[in-house]
Image 1 (cartoon, rainbow, N blue to C red):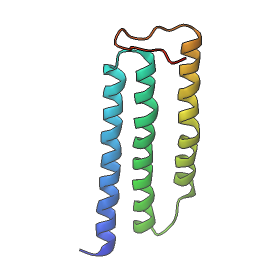
Image 2 (cartoon, rainbow, N blue to C red; image 1 turned 45 degrees about the horizontal axis):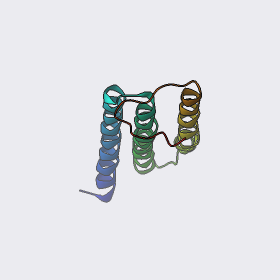
Image 3 (cartoon, rainbow, N blue to C red; image 1 turned 30 degrees about the vertical axis):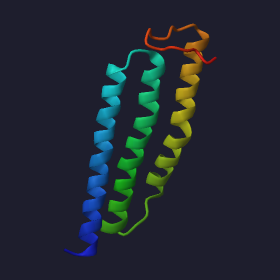
Image 4 (tube, rainbow, N blue to C red; image 1 turned 90 degrees about the vertical axis):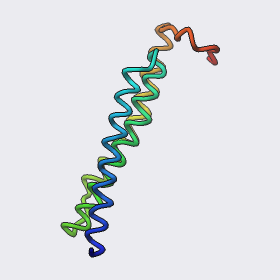
Length: 110
């Protein structure tokens, strides 16, 4: 095995790990009890899943094709700038419109 084949395998495993994180995020959205914890699952783990998937694709194209994809880098930056802000704004809107916490939550810090 050459070095480029090993790097391609690592890139493929990174994309696979990103897809597994995406499935875990989907299960979190389905299973968690209220809008606040669902948003946590949607923003944090989905952001990591996109990072892993796009990073794996970036490394694969860099090694296999020999060029650096600016679109993938911009995609990673765009998701990291917008996903946490969107999650925060959605939760802020839910809190201001008096969406109730689940019964398992013990304290409302705000």
